[in-house]
Image (cartoon, rainbow, N blue to C red; front, side, top):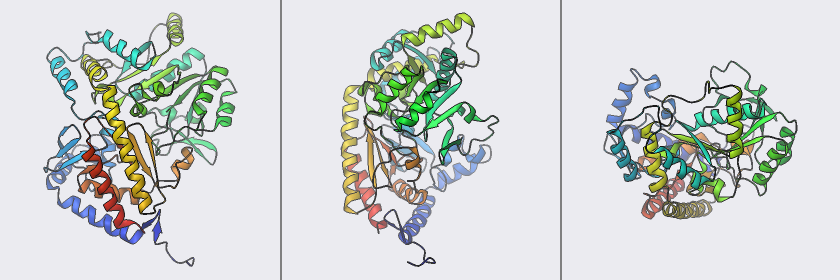
Length: 458
């Protein structure tokens, strides 16, 4: 190929076929959904960009389809199209849409009041359920994992009297400004798109690569890091698994240098009933869980050790109050009722056995498809969470993961899947399996994926 020639393939995909498929699928999508198109046009009159949350524009579709109903793993749009949902609200509905135990709890509680800024009949039981399941004795509730992470950062800085936060390159901890730091050529920078930021977050946040133990120790050795905030598996820049010994080193080094450790399980709760923390025997000082803990009702929790609880009490004795921490609707009665039902009746061992068994089947099926078509791709899995990535081997850190994506290829496949009644996560190529997912659902997914890939493979 001469220097003037254009490449004809990328990531094992024929680019001419890709362009034709993308054009054809976008046109088919728009033509089949006139009511969703009209709804999107009407919404644009008063919602910025036509949606109440800007992420709803990130599907790469001509316009988002409007959901009329959601039950189990089936989404139905206002044009009457049914979809098997493997996105599940990007984990918010990981246990299926409208599980009966949770909808019953919501119906019952709705007639008894929604919020009072007081404890309810559910409070003691929810606390006991959290402690038994995740192994930490003390808890607080917030509306989102973002709120929980903000509170944990504040508490850690107060307890240690240190200013710095440490995160891993490519991490995701919600909309916490302090965590929006990345590495560029080895130096920390603001995460691109950090609109309106007025102070330099890199002054108070250190960032290192996941699985880089020497870099982790170097960042901690200065003795000025209050908190290491970490996903046990990186999940929002593709999927990056911990290397053997990584978690043991994180715990040993944080204790050695007086830094508190928080494990954010909002995505990795897919691992099992007690999250990655219980499955792998981690010993965090703080533990954060949001999204699915109340079955999709806005709620999150953070747990902590007795030592942390005692330190929090000492702080309050010195300076009473919680200024800037918490919101009026945190731990509202409706959310607590839903959380109680989810923890006691929905997030069961049997549910996880079903979900993870299907995830194993899906991961194996995708690997066979990739091998048959000789694509330089790989598949990663964390419990009930499966992802395919456009690289021959799984990434070892955020920098490697950040080089893998291809929006054109991934977007075309995603749109083609939607047109065939299958929904996956729009931000990356992630699929979740729920208690309501069936083997037929997974087999259809693999067949559909292969048929699309077959039209594209070089």
